[in-house]
Image (cartoon, rainbow, N blue to C red; front, side):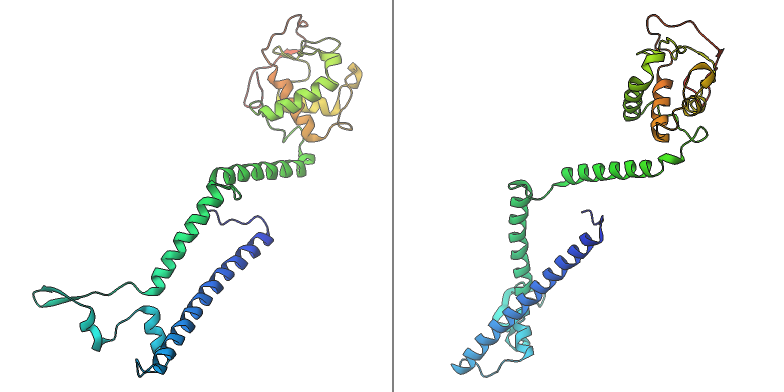
Length: 262
């Protein structure tokens, strides 16, 4: 059972439900006590017994305890080396609680496995995963502006990042670098040669600040830092794809390291 609460309202609701359950149990005990008291009073009036209602009689009725002087009535014929056995029954309150669990189990079965009005464990797990993903997205969006060429991360194995990066690349970079990164007005982005460095930090810096003297505009005024990180990773993921009609290598060959993709 997952007892984590996402909001204060859920915690308050849980406490209210627990309080109501405890209150219902107390009411059950009180009602049983009143019922037993009425039986005792009726018995006294009919002359069947001589004792009036008291807490002691109510408690005995609640627990089903047999007075010591009347144990002969429930004494069994079993004899184990002089040790006799009493036919004591389970206390009524215990039996009533057991019956209540049976009723609860029936409603639980109907609620979770027939009517499906409450989420089962698998659904709760998927909901928690979805909630966690939203929290991650919110955190990343909140801290998106803190990304720069020094803190940008290599995320070429993240399909979501690459999908977002490809979308940006298709909308803003294809005109100069080609649909597959093969190069055109701009250099080939799929080979091992780079004019301004091929590490993820260098790619991010080039996108951010541009290279005005070569016609590469600065995208920092148009793209958010997290968007520049996405497109940087998409460009890094193009390494070694060798598309047809690739432009001749330009710049210096970059040796792969922990921050580069090639």
